[in-house]
Length: 249
Image: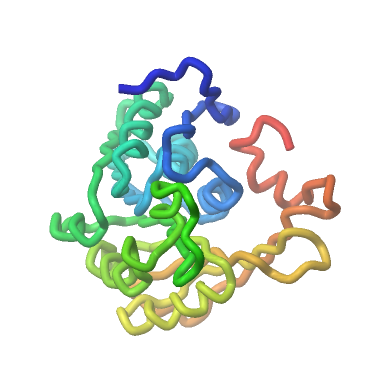
């Protein structure tokens, strides 16, 4: 049971989410991923490592205005507190009657045994491998992939869970995305979308958002996004992309 006495929720434009109990807090990467990816009226959506559910709820908010079909949203996470918080957030989320949510405490390696297929899979996965462990165990689990979730396990699981016409989107640092790209090609997953993300004008790229699908496209568009124009000013492109969620930037 959660008691939210002094914990303030993260307030978006149309809803708010609690995230103080989750292993990893709401941050730029998750909101950017949910804002940037193309949404083509998916009906089965899976979030791997859902945390407080932020990516799922943001996608559901976008999807409910353009999709009248029944929609099933599933979030999986190995952390119990994160799943409980996601369930609490669902109880306050302004979902449509055709939107259904479930949050499951499990590893993706176990979840894949359900043998379901998803139109849209998303993840902001852990990416620190073989680095110094952070002092907080739950936060460590959410950020490190040595034993928790390897890229090979993630790629294999997605290849089994993704529908033939589905797309898997994730966000990673540049070097980690290069590694994951190789793994995906070995699993029969091909790049069909890419956004290169720069923290500030003039600085090197620090994140990549990619979409992977089972049907190899002849070509795909590569977009570039700069988050800030100056240290104190967000770019107009970033403001436009995220305006549906943020109250102000």
